[in-house]
Image 1 (cartoon, helix red, strand yellow):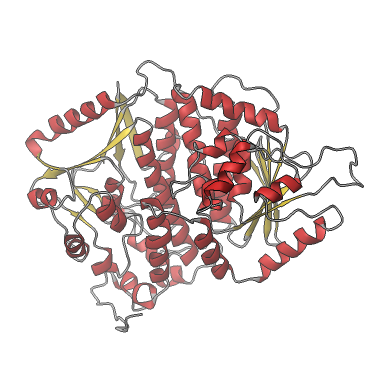
Image 2 (image 1 turned 90 degrees about the vertical axis):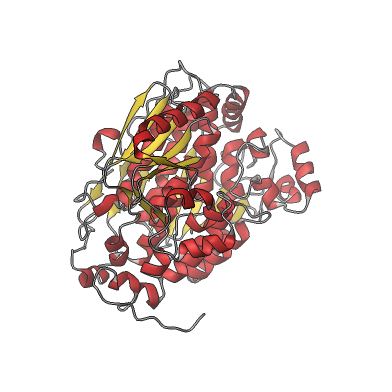
Length: 568
């Protein structure tokens, strides 16, 4: 992880921090264990133990200390990298124990000084990334690495939310350690990284008890925390290590992961970034600041599927796309429209997809598909307009067709560009097996099922055409694209769409897109991103929380917040 110094304009004083430049620090999400400042882990056979041990002076920007094992974006970037390495580099790990490297407490949650001094976009992106990492921990259980929260001290706010992402929660029973969600009574905000949702939807805490718990800043511990389903076990300190070890071994025995496999080392990304471009091996982005847009090109594989290692095309391109999404979200908030193109051979893309599906019993193939699924979900919840341009030479097939299906609009050229290459094959898309189940959205449906929600016949007709290259007429007839202009109208239609998008309110577009992207059933994921996050983001802008007399500003000063008492 690298933070470039030039854009940073942050100081320790809270008032000055509030007035800092809108330009956030330039953040690099690529890191590695030897660069961690806040996390360490050990592996003992089938069990990994992960220690949160935050360096107080290790904030990602100046202006606050990370006291009481509190965290900021830099801490979460390391946690995300750690989860990825456990999945790919340590296949023998079947259970993961999450605990604190401090003796006195587990985690105090997101750093309050950081939140009080951060811009609204910084807070929103921070919470979104944290939510995605929590969801990834839950996805690890599905992939055979079950996480167990071993709370060896108090877990407050985001610290408890981190534990809620785990499959089992153990709390030390020492008459002083509690779990709590104190955000509302102390800070006038919500537990914004899944806490409210997971308490009732995952832990099945009764609604009235959950209401009391979320307004009681000191929280609950011991037997009452167990009785209310806030934790699974309250363990006396004398039996702590024994019980944690026993639970880790029990979950390890249930896992299907191999015990003798070699991992896939994840090398540093080959990335070049300038002010107007970001380039990797298979993904590149041109930053068009005049149009307030990003042109993203994804190159398909040039060879047939080979060894399932870090060079396997699907894994390599997914790592690059994942990093690009995070980079653009954090560092380029004013580039509001992303335009996706692909280039390469569709058949080779489909061959890589099929290779992964044919080797589904291989943990490596399974992890690669899970990773692609998570990255596409990250794209779904990104607050940017997305367009897909399907042209001759494109390879929107199978896994890469998902980019077009995730887009808010798609354009497929009717015919060819006569003045460029009149002999080219017309633009085509191909539905493959990857589009029919392995890569669900957060609503539990495929992007095809979501696109045609309530119209099972439309999906069935598309499934019949799987494997067939579809030209613009066929794609339009099946409803797989939005528009099919010819080469005379192509440039104008794309230009008008980009100009129109750039003219609209970014806030309104974000709300529009978020509502339309998730048709169908509500799940815990859609509730977290579509309900809890939306409310939290609104509350972050309200004076009761973020104003000069709001609770975030007044916390720790000895002064009470001055609330506007009108209910809105």
